[in-house]
Amino acid sequence: MGVALIGFMGCGKTTVGQTVGIELGWQFWDTDILIEQMYGPISRIFETEGEKRFREIESSVITRLKIIPETIISTGGGAVIRPENMQYLKNFCQTIWLKRNITDILKRPGPDPDRPLWIADNQKMTELYLKRSVLYQKYADIIIENKNLRQTIDLVRNYAIDSLRLK
Image 1 (spheres, rainbow, N blue to C red):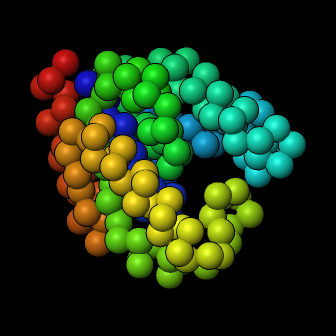
Image 2: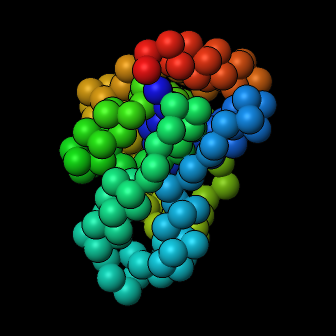
């Protein structure tokens, strides 16, 4: 089976997924990058078409992925909002919640123009984090705390190798 990384924005999904993909020689898909390649900047989609339309596009991209066993997928932080995204991914992937403490996430410079839901209001970011955490927990096959990048990469890589046995 492949591996899908879920988690809040800024938790390291892209960095970890890309690194593990390179180290293992696996196919790597980042759904946000795919969306931008096909539809343009995510911030523009949010501004001109709204979050609802963005989530439709995101679902379309996710459910069109050709997932082979040696695949790592980095999802957008809100991919868990739509059950059809997670149902599709769980048909082909083991799901890892890359969990990072909200306090550490908020230490990153922000707001980030490439992340339309990244706002300067720490209270609202925390509320969004808590709301989504329930969904990350629901869909995760395993939770990996991202406290140390190298250790997280090693844990995800080892889990990915083990996931091949679950074909």
